[in-house]
Length: 97
Image (tube, rainbow, N blue to C red; front, side, top):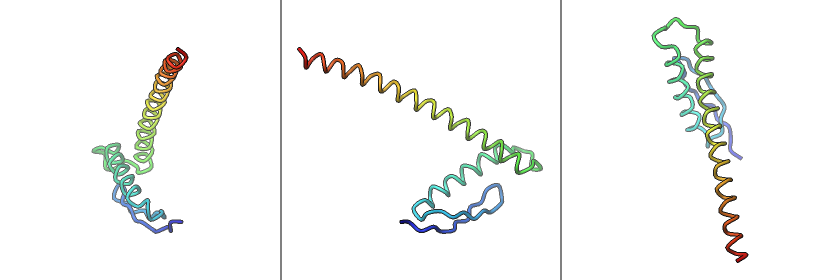
């Protein structure tokens, strides 16, 4: 069982302390960097934009990308299942011959 440790990340010039398993620190740091980048993009040149608005816009953009990746992955899985089914039928016909 991995122990939790407190890790401080910086997102949009604010620090947040998060408890994370010791094996997940790098993943958390990477996610924080991605979120920081996306929030800065969403904020753009408007430095006075409310942080909560910037966070929601960044979250929406990330959620949209995630949904696109999920749909693409589902499409690949269906295509792979179809190809495997065709190959299985061919193999069965060869073995029956």
